[in-house]
Length: 325
Image 1 (cartoon, helix red, strand yellow):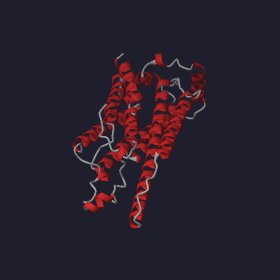
Image 2 (tube, one colour):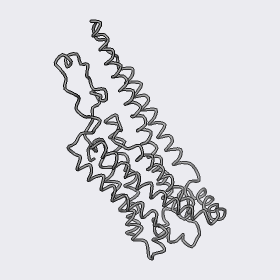
Image 3 (cartoon, helix red, strand yellow):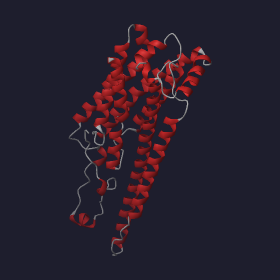
Image 4 (cartoon, helix red, strand yellow):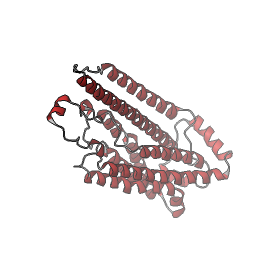
């Protein structure tokens, strides 16, 4: 029962892990705190994890479902990142154009002509809503697609995998499609497919570790962790610890541990790097991102004209300090 409870706790942690970062990005209207490599490697790692589960053929339906959910959440987070990056570039171009127009009209002795922003704001909000709707639609389609859950295949290692990954009581969902896919995997896939599944598991482990290294490097370059939802990493630590503990509690001998070794390394290995990110954020808590360095000193005349308005900042959507929710 202890291992079963730890497995459920891990699933519960992962179901909400990325929500704090999505909320933080929306509040700040920017996602520059995240490394794009972190997001891409995380998405690819979860993809390898799902393919490895399917090819091994001895994973519970809940394991496959949560792997699909991870991919959907990764895709939503990546789309949000790309949207806010495009929005930030457009703002920079707008402010650069505004500064040039101010300079031009000042030279001609005419008044400053403002640039209305209400239409741009409405278009940005509409684009954000469309991107969010598209991401949620993709999540629903992938998660609800028929035939994607896998019952444990009848193999010598199947019982060990069931003990490791949560017990058979959760394997009753979608019985018809599950049984058909399990029969196909058990009878049609060659033996090398299981080895390929293990290899993909190790690949996902490496990608998970590299994703954290990419985020550590991003924080070091910025000299700040502002914009990161630290609660996401706290929850990730809890999820990985409970998942790794559930494997160790249910393992009765070394062969069982060895069968789940890629997922064990991937979970417990990232705990150390997640803790490193949290410590890095603590070390940089009083620093400012390199992109938000103070502007150069201005003369009183320049300050009055507003010619040196920062081009990389948005006053109405200024940076918000990260919060641990």
